[in-house]
Image (cartoon, rainbow, N blue to C red):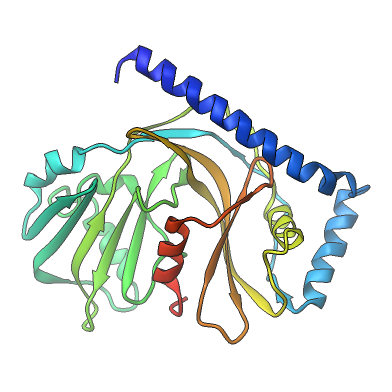
Length: 278
């Protein structure tokens, strides 16, 4: 990618981001002006949630700092898959699907630890040292590692390795996607807290009564795509589970603005993969 192309992509990206953020700020302004004292207001709203039988668990008021990120989804996995051993890889649509010739035995009680050690071997998984285990996205049948970026994690199907286990708790295959040249687009900015993210989600009527918050995570999720380039923003990803339902729903809140990020096909894919297992 030459410098001129990068300039054009960044220009288009920032215009799109500015439009997106303007809409989010407009959406949140009325909500923010109602809070004379945010601390007292937050406590009252959390109490309202508990009164509505919403189990929120322990919430943090700590803010953090994060970036706008960019990365490229190209065919680097295809060009490197010849170095993989004892497996049969196939490359389709920027994803590497590979089946092991013999199942790989891992610890039944702590499979992620066994896999983490194997990830350092480039003949087992390409660029394995650039991924970290995600307990949130993993299940009893699928162990997920997500790509690391700028002291954070990318929660996207375009940046993960998903290992599939058989009934004997052995790895039989995996699917890998990878983002190249991940970098920040501008200086870091402060994010909202976990408490504030959950409150906004509640005020958007996205959390029904009699619901449990299963987990929440500050991670990077995709904002937009420009050809093979991707732009990511820090996002509070919140998993909720209504009472008497096996379905886990993933909700997303922009960690910079507090604006809700509507459900996408990727959300559905991730949610379906963890339903009934966490």
